[in-house]
Each structure stands twice: as structure tokens, then as C-alpha cells.
Image: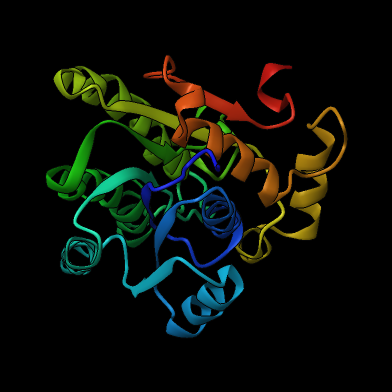
Length: 244
């Protein structure tokens, strides 16, 4: 029996990278998974890769109407949620002095606002005693030049977790933050130059990026009963980068 046997999981931004690897592992461990993505083609490819026990719902996690449509689909098809992995997020570099309103709004609209409303809209379907976790970033504690807005949008999630676990303690719902370090994903290729990648790799003790599958196994821990006494933490999965 898998660690998530019979569970229903929702993963936002699940059509690529870390979230896709997580969705695949969750299904292998017995869950039924709903994933979202903005591009239908990528979403269809993700569903095909996962192969079974998965529903893809096209939508932007920053768009509240799209979130409503996601949870209406979950309610119609399964009627409950046991695990929410609010993973949709994005960050592009802009140094102080170059930051625009559009840059700020895009980062906070998806990473912070989108996460907040994904959690809030999931709650009516959520089973007591289950698990919510969000994708943070070790950038929120390191201060990398050019990533101030992104880092701040992710730092807010740590605060959310502290407050929400207290507000949800009567339902015994755990709330945690999974904060990856540099992970080799298609999105990373879009936002980092080769020079920036080499710089980040130099900060990791083993000298190379993490893999999406290495995030997925930690997500499985947070989703399953293995983490039943883990609540309100920010778990850095960064190969030790933030520790040195």
C-alpha cells in the first residue's frame, strides 16, 4: 500500500518541473491528483506522462476565477481534498532601481496572492487532519541581488504558515513550507543565465543543482502521515546552500 493510498491531492502549477515530479510520485503512492497549468499543451503532456489517476485543469493560479473552476472540478469529481501543494510560482530578476509595478504585481499576484486564495478556496473541501504545504524558496533568506521582489513574495509564505496552522488547529490541518534551492527545471532555464547557474552551483556543497525528483520525495513526506508531527516549519531542500 502506498503512503497516499486513497488520498486526493491538488497541486497547482503541476504541469512541469518539481510539481510535475511530485504529482507523478503521489500517483505512484496511491493518490488521485489534480494538477493545474496555464498552457493546455503542457498540461496534456503532463497528464499523459503521469498516466493514470490524474485530472488536468487549465488555469492560472493568480486568477481567482480559474481557482474557482479548479475546486469546482475537484468537488464534482472527488468531493474532498486531503493534500494541497500550492506550488505555482515564478520569479524574474530585477534589481532595485529597475523594478516596475508590473514586475512587483506579477510576483506577488502569483506567488503570494495566488497561494493565499488557493488555500482559502480549498478549505471547504479539505478533510480534517490532513496536509497543506506551499513552495517557498531559500532565496527568501539569502538576499540574492536582483531577486528582492521574488524573495519577499516567498518570505510571506512562512508567515502564512505560522498564522494558518494556528487558525486551523481545531481541524488538525498541518501547514508547512517546502523551500527548494536551485533545481534544474525548464523554468530555471527561462529565468537564469548560464553564468547565474554556475554561480548558484558554486554555493551548493555538492557542486550541482538539485533534481525535481529530490523535491518530490520531500513533498511526499510532507503530504503523508510520516510528517504527522511536523507543523509550521520551513523545510529547506537545497543541498545545504542556506546553511553555509
